[in-house]
Length: 249
Image 1 (cartoon, rainbow, N blue to C red):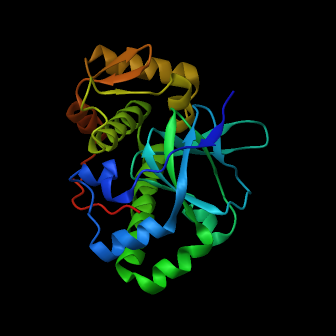
Image 2 (cartoon, rainbow, N blue to C red):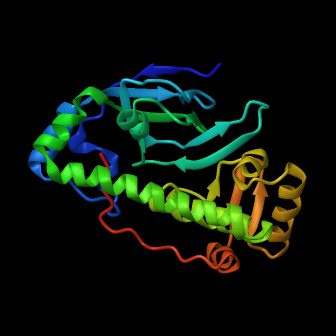
């Protein structure tokens, strides 16, 4: 059964995300503030719902490890996956600013999350304008990603749509160093891809077979192995912008 439970706290000064050169490092004052802003950590089982649409959560979360996905569900049960959250990504900012979550978040894999009290967010803006800008950057980046996803759903063909999504997931996953100890396999099911692409499961399966026939991907029991991310990006006519000094909280 999916569950959430507290875990031993990781000191922010030795946070594993700080070892990743893709992320902007904190100065001493920022690091001290973040250590006080952080109230604990949570371990989350695969399948646990972290946030529910319509809820008023008192917490913000940063993904320390693992993968989650954001989604909305229509009244008849149809689901649209909006995006995926990987290490360094922030979860719950929407609910913190607007007051209510407009989507739900579920753990795709076991996860570790850093907890922050949303009630203390005002002090971050007041005391550390650099961190406040980082939050604005994170929100703007999420908007840019969703713009590209909307373009894909609205205008790309099924083949281009699937190629873009897999190339995007590869680049995002690779930036977290998640592939460092093994082959580039993203832990996703065809049903989840179907719900992200806005295609039927049958259409999704046929489209993935076309990509596999071109030796771009290989479907594994534990997910999708990306063989040629550049080839996928070329099909989708999509360029990945390398993010340098990407902020996180």
